Image 1 (tube, rainbow, N blue to C red):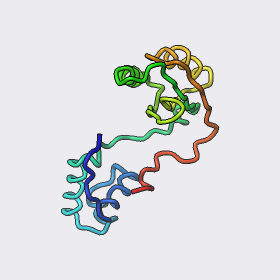
Image 2 (cartoon, rainbow, N blue to C red):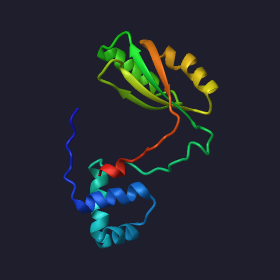
Image 3 (cartoon, rainbow, N blue to C red):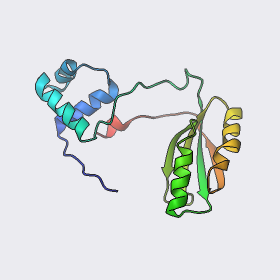
Length: 158
């Protein structure tokens, strides 16, 4: 499904970069940082929100301070890849809180999942009791992350 992409100029991209670093910044401070007055900055901000470029504002948490420092990536192969099976898998995967990301992949497997838990013991439980029992799962392969070198860097590509 292709969505219309709004044209973004340098000021729009500057707004996005600043908000990616500090989503709680005031419009006045945002305007100062990007070099525009408050009114056009606010207009641009509203336009970016209406266009769906900015989808919301939220707090970011440090998973390590929350005790969620075990990260695994799981390749999932399904025994059925028709649209109905994919939709069933998607709906079930969305309900599992330990699954941080779900990506449908074009390659030797069907999905790549990012799982975040407190420990290997917790991960093994999640794998056995939930991921392996998701609809249409044929098999899985797990890769344990040793260190996150870069995450949440969308602002780098804007």
